[in-house]
Image (cartoon, rainbow, N blue to C red; front, side):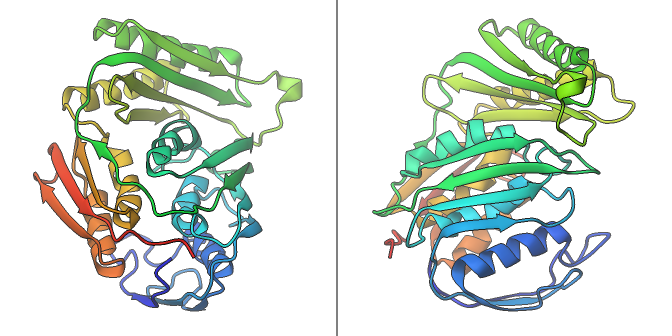
Length: 331
């Protein structure tokens, strides 16, 4: 993109296992391949890296961290570069599609990617096989069209009217009723909360036709509004956690984000920041909740890309973000 060399220090310094983990390393090496970069510090546990990119070619790649590391986080790392590549790209990524502490793959393909179209970004995702922690085994195929003109700025400052709530409740290597109970509990909670137009699809696999390593389950919910607001919430199943709890948890999170009145939920806010920074002109979003991830993403965009941001609001509260993008021109 900008072609700038960067040095990153104190990587994950305050975490229990500081430094790069396998999924971070996989994303870094994927970026290295995509941008033909010179890299130092590319090893597990590294707390400092130097990254010197060259040209962004695009094309076909395979990324495999060898763990259940989040595929969604790898997509977040490589997508801003791939849209500025010299040609369209097709990337096979292996790992975890539905794992803790990262966006589930359904949130990426059904919520984030449609939002990116507002910028003029065309990207699609095919889930070949789901992967859950700790076994992984997930496989997705990512299709990215290179952009031919600068990204358009976006305006998402009003939540509007909630017209419909969509969802996907899935389970693998588990009985069908797990997905059904997750969906039913979520729908019941949403109906009690006053929402009527609800459609939650169920995904499950007969025991003899289930290709996943599993077991695993989860649910993703998102609201369709009159202003194209981006509001999503999700929950993962785990051993000892009833399916009803999973469903209600996701529904509760979504209703809380809606009540806060923002046009973008807390998790999608930080994912939009890099694209706002690269867009040509002023983007404005009102977030339901300003998170540390969002504030960190803004500071990184300021330092590396040179975009200007103004934030109105405090961490943990609803906030307005105004970005003056640099209008990066595709090569």
